[in-house]
Length: 191
Image (cartoon, rainbow, N blue to C red; front, side, top):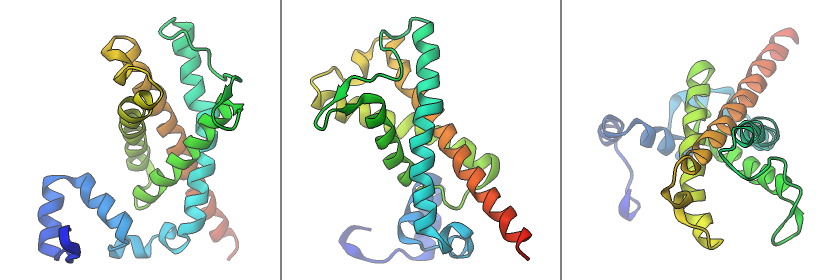
């Protein structure tokens, strides 16, 4: 809260009533939740964040670029997927640069959605992907690159970001879900 004062449980309840996403973000960032402290994700948070990176990285290569391939085939975009053109500033292939940033976003997604599981995780990850990375790409990255914000607000180009990023979010959520259930299965087999 402003000024660094603590949030009381009553204020937290009112905050949750106004915007449930804010409460999830607050609890994820402060680890101020009994449920989170008891979850496997919280007890192994560093590992969970690494899984978020790997899931986000692979989700770009499989889901994001797969969706981009479909949009390219439909002629919604002139950009071919899996671009190997050098990306500034290091000259790595563009697809690997995208995958790296997908991993970074995957860490954020994993941190924010650590308490969710199953269908809730998948839906939240898909929505997260469609909205947050898209807004940053539209209103921060594009202007920095001298491109029009939000694809110039022209259809169907404006839909490309939400579609490919939702596919990325779905893939990242799937990776997180697989890891959580795979880990849970291995833990019970070891007994």
